[in-house]
Length: 279
Image (tube, rainbow, N blue to C red; front, side, top):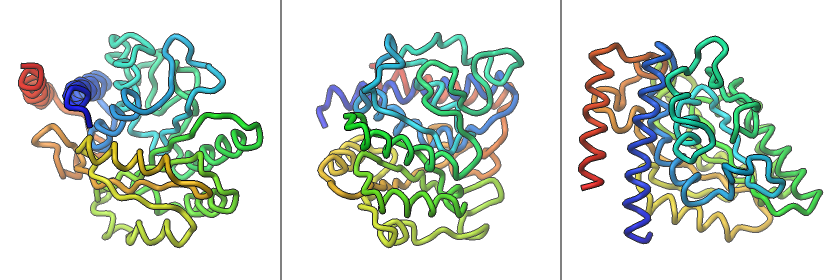
């Protein structure tokens, strides 16, 4: 990856993480762990990959994005705010009554293509979008992000079978493999492993990636572009809570908001990282 682009993506990802913490703290609820683990991915998608237009959010041939693991909406919202879909001030009213940004993505929000949050359903919607594109000879691609705990849902595998059957090579599903879900380690709750082999068995082209390495992400998405006749699954290894020391690999931050002291520490760490990157 070009060094200048990589540096800019690293800076933007740090700002996205700050936006996540800002939103969840002000909401006094939310899901910071899984939001932080996809911050680099969201940054890569919206600032290096997707054809999306803040000034034309309903452009017919724009790429589509579905956050199947909708509880990590803070990551999507912080990314959309950085991209210019709506003011960053909106992040402070996350989950407030009457506010634009609610606990799960809602389709009325600029830049959001699908209301999501009921786990397992997002990938099915993404399949429908991809099939529609095929039928209409549209040029857009569809991207969706699933949690590794989410893929314990049976509907995910019905959708996977559907996508392979209809040869939806305009669909890319990314699995955020951070290894933790609300009740603990995924292998202890209801193990979905081996994830790579399962998607291959369902007829998908599978790519593995490092969720926190932009070179790895670029390589994975570049490979996805070369695939014909199959949907693509990118299984990316990530760290839950990435970027905030006391949240990293800590399952208790799956669905909890930081208090004032914890918020201050998180902001201090991320601000220091941002200054280092910008310096």
